[in-house]
Length: 217
Image (tube, rainbow, N blue to C red; front, top):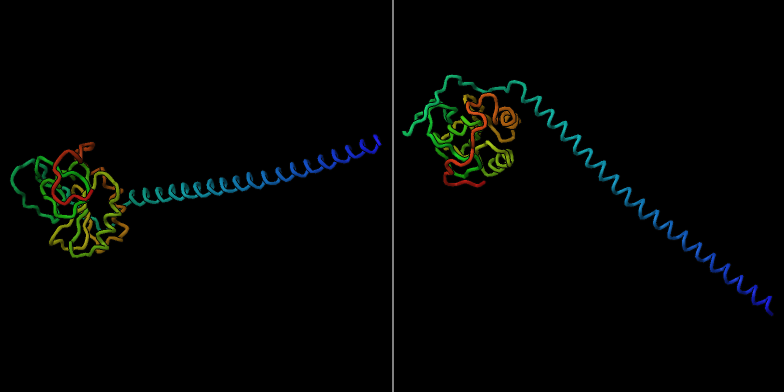
């Protein structure tokens, strides 16, 4: 009888050990699947982030290379004056690319209404690029220009009634007129001339000055 009970206990222990071993094997398999899945997700994220970074690096290199070259159809006006005056100024270029200007600059940003020439010329002296557009180009084009300017500093964007082209980009002594907000030369112009070599007063502020009506950002 004792031998029978002993054998039964051994059998129970063996079955229990087998069940426990099976459970441990199942847990190891589940853990492997879980951690394997997590590892795959992490690897996919790393690959995706790496591709984005590599692509952005290449985009930046391409933009730098484009900005290093002359931009087609940019007009140069090397002899503009730069006196501070209180009175209105009649500029030879429209929009102006420099010249005598108000002692107070226009704060950089996006404007939905025309802004004063005299103050905005002062902003360009500080290294700002002034992007202007004919108000008749339509909201879709205006939205593209707003996206182009984005969160860049040292940029003015505003309508310019009577502009003889759909869009113009102006820096101190320089101007590019184009037919569309999609023109790739606009991006290159911004990359090249925001605080570019043409800047008469590098490091001067484009804030703390005049904020005309209609500022959107």
